[in-house]
Structure formats: C-alpha cells, structure tokens
Image (tube, rainbow, N blue to C red; front, side, top):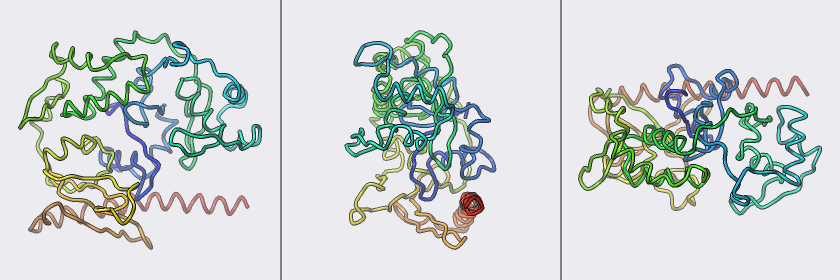
Length: 349
C-alpha cells in the first residue's frame, strides 16, 4: 500500500471488490477481504484522491485541510452534522446503524439524485472535511471515529506537487489528456490545492516529469519511473478489475491495444457488449479480451471474450488455466469468510 500510495475502491462484488482485485495482482498470496481484515493493523486511511479509495496516512495528509467553499475557510459543522460529530467523539467507532437509534431514519437527497439516510450523509461530510476518519470496515460498511488532531499541514503548493506526482506515478505512462482529467477530479474534491495544470507544466519544465509524443498521443510519467522501459514482460494471463491502474486510462488503452473496453455495470442488459462486470484480460504486454467470472457450487465459471481471436498454442492455454485457478482460490477465501460470518450469526441467534 505504501509503494502504490493509493488503491481505488468500489462496492460492486462481481466477482470481488475492485480493491481486492487490484491487490491480488500485486501482493503474493492475497485473498479477497485481506485489505479489510488488515486495515487497522496497517494504519490505513480512506479518502478521495482522483477516486475514492484506500491510502496510507502520508497520502491522506496531502488532501487536508480541505476548505469549505461555502465559507472559503475551515468547515464548521452545524445542525445534525454537529450532533453526529459530538456523538462519535463521545462514543468512539460508530456504525451508521448506531446513529439511527439516536437520530432516527430521516432521508435526504444524495449527490446522485437518490436518497440516503441523513445521518449517513452527515458522516460522509464530516469525513470529507477531515473531522472524522474511517476506523475500520465491517462487512464492507465503514465505521467512523473522530480524526486525531492533525500535524501542521505542509504548504498547499507542496501538497499539490506531491499529489500530482503521485497520480502521475500511479497511472504512468499516462496520456496527458487523461492525467489532466484525473487531476480535475482531484481538484474538484480538493480546491485548497489550487490549479493543478500549472503544476504539471512546471514538473515537465524542471525534468521532474518526462513526456513523449507517440503516434499523435502525448504521454507523461515521473522521471523516476523510467525503469518500466527495461522491464521484462512475463507471458502470463492476468484478469484485471476495470479500475486497475493499468486500464484506468482509457485513451492509452485504445491507443495501445486498438479496441474499446467499456465498464457496463450501469448499462441496461440489452445494450451490454461485454457483460455486467467484464474483467480485462492481460496476456503478456497486451489486453486481448475480457472475462465474466463467478463462483457457483464451489467451482469457477468463466465466460471469455476476445477483441480479435483467442491466441493459438498451448502456452496461452496453460497461462489462462493458471490464472483461472488463482482466481478460484482467491474467491474461495471470500466464500469461506462469508460462511464463517453466517455460522457466527446463527450462533448469536
């Protein structure tokens, strides 16, 4: 986690949550749910970088303090939010359900145009402004506690520089258009960092970042990341989440592999081309297709598709079988954890 600096989160579990699918490719022996189980031990935080996700405390320190645009200064909670903050400070780690007993179940319009519990929105707002932190997760649900008193923050220009370099390193080599898009998402949630395009321009001028135009597309990366040029590419098959840094930059995806991948979880079934949660299939140095995966009766079921055609030969078949076996073991751990929770629930009843 400290090497990456950030892992994107997503609540969909088909076949597993994005954060687990990202880490299974980077942590030897990783099993579904390990991040949630080790969250406290690892001293991790949750917050919004260019997307919502998990991060070490040094990354979260780049994002705070967040000014309140309504007052152009520090956020001062009032009304229900102030009451929720007082409750959490007095009671310690708090499940959203705990607040229902104290404040009721009133609902309010959320940022998606739907409805959420007003107390849940208050928790999320207090977390956004750094007054609360995520203490742990329980079956995917965030439990909040009061954030400790923060150390004096570094100056905003330095926080902005480090945040830009972190995002560029995560996605490197990243198309400049996509980098600016990711930084626009970062700036929207972190207006205190100031404009970020000039930070990129300054890094390119100083040599802290490098760039190159390839077939009409501008790419950029931190100068310290240039070692990827010389890395040997293993001839493995890897099934990636749609949120993996390798496929996050859709411009780069189309440029390198000459086909368009779409995340279709929110697309009506009749209009899907790939499937509800199609996992991009990496083979060697190319994403050649996708897979829809599920665990049924303890056995892995995989429906595969290819951008052009299935690679011929035994080598690909063996590599694919190895990855499907890894995925089955990975998903079995999630099922086993669910079975243990079910048995515990029966015992409690």
